[in-house]
Image (cartoon, rainbow, N blue to C red; front, side, top):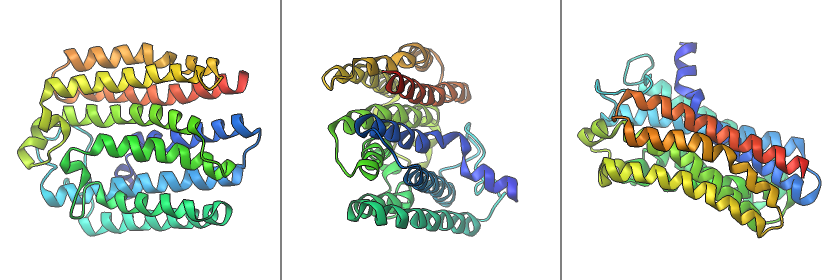
Length: 291
């Protein structure tokens, strides 16, 4: 059972929660000269717990809607495969949301009501991504959700908690991180396009077709890289070099989505996209610290 719960957390997705907080803290330190490890830890844990809750709810809701079928070529889902009951998975999601609330209390005490303005929608959308009256993932809004909440909101919120300031630099960094995180969703949806179409899950890959879905991945990678040039405007030219991994691994991803057939072989591209996201964060940290 423990293995099943660990599988339900989807560890490979967690960099999308860790990276925005990581680079947000680095940017806050770069802008203000200081940072709070306590607030960083509370922010990081809260983001990870919300990500895990989202994964749990997604697993249970997709199974209930019949979206996970025998055609699935991605990682095993614990509810659809019978490893855990739907009730157990939903309860697990609620538990991790409760842990996120506890982290939020610490942040509210430090930064006030803006944390509530960020936290309440984020916690609702952990469920509303695939559940509720308007499930974003089923309406082709998955990529937009990721850019906004795992990019702009997460980075800007992290910087605000550390500095009590809303900074335009955080918006730029949030866009870069959000686009790179959206690459993961786009590849995932391209891989699962046939299955999603058969179960009524209207992702952008299903709505637009395979060719446009591939162009979307190209756009997300290139836009994140080209946005790096805007760091010159903010007087931080060295931070442009944080995009170096995007020109290297990004080429591999783009070539892969163009040439690889939809299906399990795209799981390798997902791994490359996850490494790309972490590599960008590492390079951003390196050049922010050195220059």
